[in-house]
Length: 182
Image 1 (cartoon, rainbow, N blue to C red):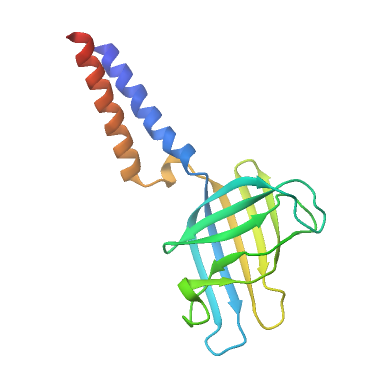
Image 2: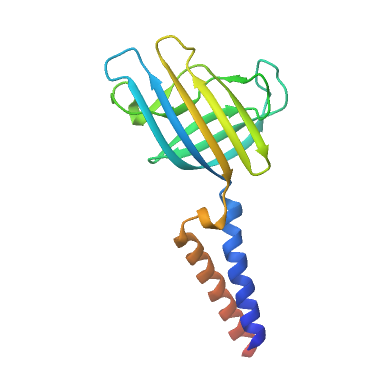
């Protein structure tokens, strides 16, 4: 009986730790911008799950190190774009998308995007980062996106995810125990 309790306790700990590895980062962000049309200003803030996905060619202007795709979600939409960590003075890319609000014609699906973006991504240590991206080439239509991120922990994950994982592992342990006693 003591062995079964020890196994179950171990499984609960593993169940709590496993989902934390599945979700990479949590990001606090602010998106603000202006489009030179009535109703084209916004300022939004939020907290979103985020991931760094893949490894791609270096970005201008310095082409130092590989780039990666930073993807985050807010209000059911995906946003982000290519970034190069630690590249100074900054990275330059196209296709960045940020949350926006206001005129639905200007911002379909609550998204502002432009053919040019530049920014800085800095990891302060292996568990935190800061990001500042200017989307658009300036002038009349632009957005600034600022964020700080930290590695996800079990405390930042949805309790339902942890509960389902723990129940599944508990059920597997019970089935295994029944097979060994039969």
